[in-house]
Length: 193
Image (tube, rainbow, N blue to C red; front, side, top):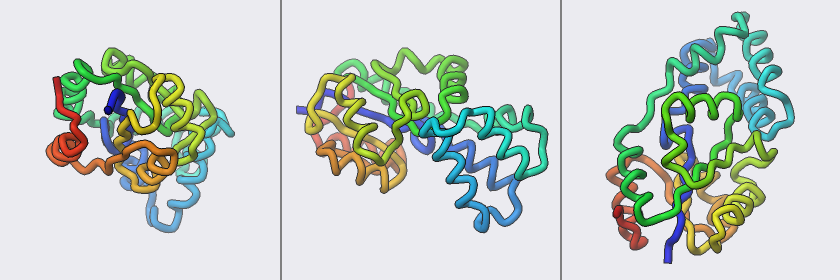
């Protein structure tokens, strides 16, 4: 029986504002994608502080570091349809957020957008030095939820993270849109309250 639903943030609850901003501001991003992914992974894993992450972005692009986050935040659009669906799901299931993100940024988003009430637990990778798709991140969320892997469903927009969840025994769904998610969850017996 499913007891908990675990949602990713970037690309699911909200658009991936970091990559949208980079696409608009980095000429030939395809040639620099590895660099920006590497520094994102480092900050998400708490290997470098947020200030260093911002400095590296600003330095690479020749922009003022104080402009980086406000400009990225401007690109953030929340999936209101999904948030409404999560609100309905919360009536019957424990809801968690598991996101690879710099906590300084995501905690600001959560506070500004009043998202905290939707989640029973919030696991931001840089707070715990543990990122998806590594097993440790999933296991730590399951421990905090007090559920076994087979009692949880994980929802993410990246196949590598879906595979990571499945590798620890969690049922996992690739997110494309809310209509598809409703169908996929229903096939697992998960319906909104």
